[in-house]
Length: 434
Picture 1: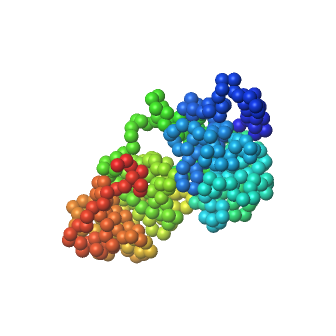
Picture 2: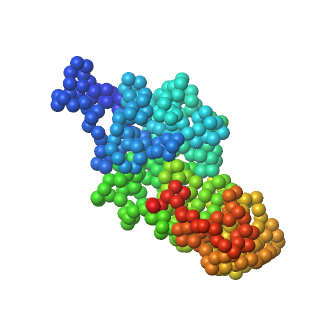
Picture 3: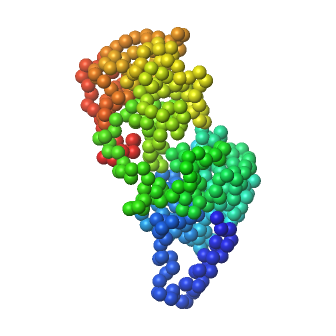
């Protein structure tokens, strides 16, 4: 990124040349009217989501809201984001994630030179700007990029600050900072966390990196116009097809881990369900669970372990910061749960130790606290076959194609003779199209 002083000087100089006081632009135009087009290839100054999940892309005194649509002046949304407040552009920005302190959680922080500005609900917070060192001690001025890293992805709620190939990992709670050098990563002019993945933007390209090690896996850089904006003909990735219609959804499994992360599995892909505020996207299962590359039959969580059943095998992962396969797995399902595979679904209700495994029209109760584990009870269910099952505080949901049936408990599911009215899988929850 060009040094912030130089950028600010160039911006100020251009305003003096093209629109000095008392004179008009040579063509009678306001230079601000010349809107940049991100589909022509732009190096963004900053990228950040807001508290509502809208993603903003910044360039000079303009921004783009969301992944499609034209540019507009930044101060149309962030009122103080203009030259009169010395914030005609930004060096870096991020959305704070720190639920332990609601006074800062979900606030947007903008950085310019040696100052930091805090916004909430598009309004500059009282008392800002302040010196970067006052708010983030140990973090240098004239930053290139910044991105939040919540606890569960990083060890603690943190922010990664970028300046050249130096990265400053800032612990929000303790206000301590650790400096790293990621010489292998391009110099990031902006950074963005989206759906648990981290992206370094440079030029009109991006590189996905690991937020702890900085490692880059896969083929990068990639053109941002193919992934993070809708630029029409000639751009796009994969098959370029529309999003899946809700009527076409057919889940293989659905679960929530002990940290509240919810996932739905379909074919060889997964989608995160509890981050819909920021959007939704399907990713290969192998991205989080490296040993799984094909369709899963059932998934459930018990304690801090995630059980993934595939055919007659079961994989058990520790659901810590990253999912790690426990040594010795996969094992035969018969050995682990006392039942032969394959299965259609498996679910565990909150604060229970009985996993309900469904095969065809039968539901088996298996006590996970017992040794050895074995079928404790066998009961019929009113469906010849289901695709997936899930249990939370609201009860049991049985998924069949694009519909699901709700029951208050596994017992009522087994005793029910009349099926309740089916409910449709919704775009709000599953990111599909109506």
